[in-house]
Image (tube, rainbow, N blue to C red):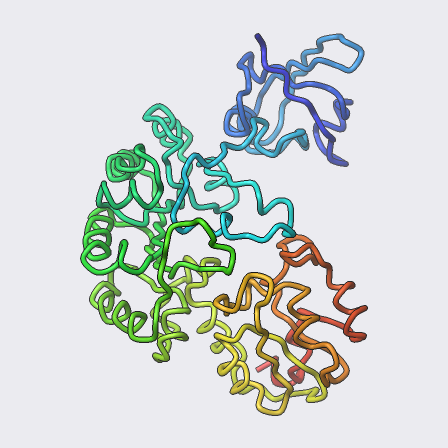
Length: 409
């Protein structure tokens, strides 16, 4: 049966618009080839001459011949971002944050994907347990580089246990295939105390650096208050963080990075700005604090009658940077008090912590609390909801705090 890919919309001033394509039409083939997903589509439309087979809303099939510049987009928006539906995660990881969520969270957080295509297009981390050897070859054929891989452990039994998946043990085989095929990788390790730390972590790092990855990040497991019936995991203590820092110190030249939590919770000085190279895993919480300090510390304050809300973990640093501004460390009631990072603060947390407090004439928060493309928190509250409850303007534009004169330097 032929694939029919529904066109959701057509962008203005696009090639598709000039052809008369519209919402409700179906893409059947490109260059006489069926399109399974967005990878096929992007590959086939990259040529300077292409042919589209379109099933119009009226039931007629039309062929469109197109001459364009190489790699020009057509302006077609499909019903599904990937055309095909994203692959659901087949693992049951012992540390999975999504299994620790309360009921009222942003709906998109509930869906667990594990799709190598999203890793390439959006930077998601994937375990590759959903992949067959043919799909690994497909990654290589389309040169989907880099791929971000959640490794966690290279020891077969440990990784199978951590992911609760018997297919998880072939990770080194797949990484070897990818690297041999010219695919760059970023690797991630979620560290669980007593599970994949110590000797297992040592083995994992040594195994990975054999493949010369772009980067390896290590982040501590996050434990919310919603863990009833889940695998028993321990919180890291100050000395545990320090032990890990000491352990990976010798691997700095191999682009092995610890997330900021290790240094902040271990009360150890952050590495230098140069240590993080080009900050390859800053979205994973690696180097975010150092970049902030590099850009903004000790700037001259233009407006002191404002307030800042941040996570408890980074509170001492923010307070030091803004000694004349009211800085409030936010207790995380939504996920639980063990969660101390700024990125997981919700709108309801801000309201509960700050109601009735002296907030000055404006409250500043970090944009990492919000969805990338929308002013909405993880609990589905919006900035305007917080503003209404706290009766104050809320902003993520911290540059307003500093004088324009200082920022030009």
